[in-house]
Image 1: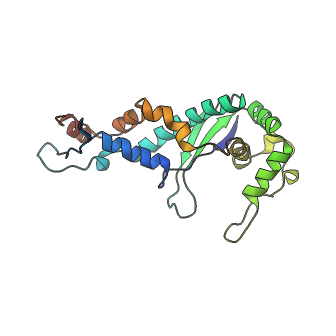
Image 2 (image 1 turned 180 degrees about the horizontal axis):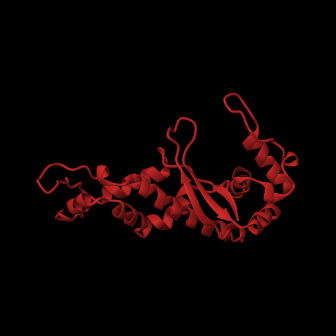
Image 3 (image 1 turned 135 degrees about the vertical axis):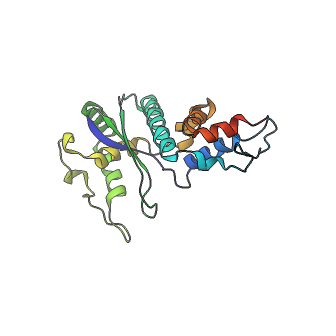
Length: 206
């Protein structure tokens, strides 16, 4: 199995953070979409977002996103990635980078993807992604010819380039559209709430 990144715009002021905020707001709305103030057991005001384990939310969201991405990818290319979620890497600071999702896929899928794209398309993407410019120094050669011929020697960023090339036109909302509609995000947020947060929601009279 080869580890790779998959295209993902992260949780910093992105579509994904906006959707999680939207779902959180809906959890405290009445049937007329008006916000209901939350209180604790003693009647004091309670902010729901403070009672959520956001690391858990992001981890479960990333797993769901990876699953949805692979389903979309197979539909678009006919290539089964058979991916297994590996990790969510979140930076300490969002100044220069954002969250990255890692999965593991079989070498067979990497070879199929390479063949499906073709060297010319891949080389164009490598030049686009790894050519140094003011403010960016690439640690990779910006030519396919300079990369290992054996795909088994490619690392996660090199394999991720293949996936980015294939999904160049994909929009984040397309990947998560079904999950936004079927309540999966609600479940992720609910499961990450502490007991005090759940109790506050259960006290709401809608």
